[in-house]
Image (tube, rainbow, N blue to C red):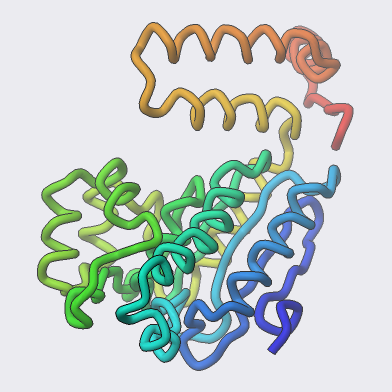
Length: 262
């Protein structure tokens, strides 16, 4: 299976939809990993795209973990698992730092590598009957694609430890209460809600969205003083664009802004 078969990219207006096509449960194979990177890069480099949605095909899963069939090849071999993890980190980090806002639209199971993919997206939307977890402990493992770090920062160490130590999935309701999910939708409507949110985002300035996202991303983990300094620098950059001139003029003239890149 080549990347274009494992992952597809479609465009609706100014929104790109990247869909994992690896039935029955969209596990993370090498082809899926490479396809995600290729599609993410294509969407990121397209100046007409303002927001990107990541989702999984079918009704069973967003992504139900990694391809465990390949794990025996790494057992007992120094550096093999580390190298494998690094290839995943590179894709996840590219998605995390894309200059377009990203949304994970989740239906069904979101486990292991699926959780880790969703965690590098900016927003997360899920059906009410979706389930989220890190089942790796049952394999004699723990999350190796950023799960121990990113889930802790979003939902806190207590819930992260519970999920990893027990391997038991949690409900959409609990994931929402923990701050991991932004929205919970009725069954089958996560993608619809994600498109609605992406459409709202796409009505704004792409350069300004990129500056805002960069300020947030780079500010995480800094001190308040360092973060405020970063924010001020990017805020100044915003004042050097044509879009702020249009936005302020539209406000003062009581009309809808027509941003340069829209």
